[in-house]
Amino acid sequence: MFPELKRLIEQMGKDRGIDKQIIVEALEVAMETAARKKMGPRVEIEAHYNDEAGEIDVFQFKTVMERVLDPEIQISVEEAREKWDEGAEPGDSLGMKVDAGTFGRIAVQTAKQIIIQRVKDAERDNIYEEYKDRKGELVNGFVQRFEGGSIIVNLGRAEAVVPVSEQIFREQYKRGERIRGYLCDVKKISKGPQVILSRTHPGFLKALFDVEVPEISEGLIEIVNVSREPGKRAKISVRTKDKDIDPVGACVGMRGSRVQSVVQELRGEKIDIVPYSDDPAKYVCSALSPAKVDKVFIDEDNRAMEVIVPDDQLSLAIGKNGHNVRLAVRLTGWKIDVKSQSMATAQEEEGFKSLMKIPGVGEATAERLFKEGLKSVMAIAASDVETLSAIPGVGEKSARQWIEAAGKILDQGVA
Image (cartoon, rainbow, N blue to C red):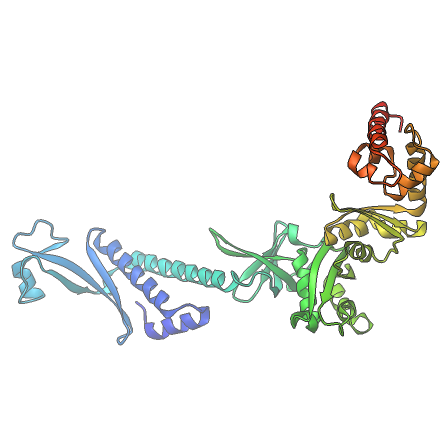
């Protein structure tokens, strides 16, 4: 039934990367199933692989009885002594080798199906074990086919999928074309393990720089954060503890060679490399690159910044469809409100005038409040007596009156 079985087991294990014992167990189960298919479900059957002979031995076991009530699982003392064992006694369990050649075509076909399924299951387990700890790695493969918009990638011994949600907008691939992805997940589903690749994940950009910039892979430069709008624009922030290394310059490379390799892989996605800083204002200003910043006002409590840029830099700071400022927000973790110098000036003038609507606040006092960062009626209303009275020349009584008056002005919608 299984000619040259020993060689077949070894070859199958080698070709498919499966442990020899798994194949042997599959064969034993298959032979037991085939025997029961031929001899009935109630018979007691055991199958064992004989490594020396290179074959599967199948044994049927029967219990020795004084009086036989069920011939399928019992045998008389006389028959047992005559055919199997001269010293057989009642209660003994005796096994007789069964000729596998008598199992028939259907039984053999069932056995083959079991072996194929067991081998497939073993292959799936191997694939899961191989890839489950490789999350975060770059993976190379070839486009094999397309299923409902997803790209099925041939990785060699395994298949991976790039779902529509993980594909860069407008990227197109042809069958057989090389594709690179970020291994973001490995799932166990009914069909087997599913290796999921992404080309939109921020980690993909990080992993590409890790390959292109030796200083990153060696730990001399750290990528602090990555923000992306896949296929359009991305920003990464970098830092180093080595004062002799320029982290931005190292990532850009000689004549932009390193960053261009990444851009080429991402098919033209623009990449800004930003120096990280522990100073939030400095970090945000760098993140808004290539725009230049004039002033920054920080609101620590709300983790927000008001950024003032020259009028001709406003569109650059905001970026096409807001890409630049949106990526800067994600990169730094700060809320960023970008205003042009003329917008800020107009708002300041308006705020200055609104302050003088508060009874007892003249031009000089308004200027003093302005310098302290209280630039509107709303700011006064939101303040407290302690904060206001701490300003030179402002007493507690005046502070209380101004806060109350500012609240009334806001209620009336006058400011």
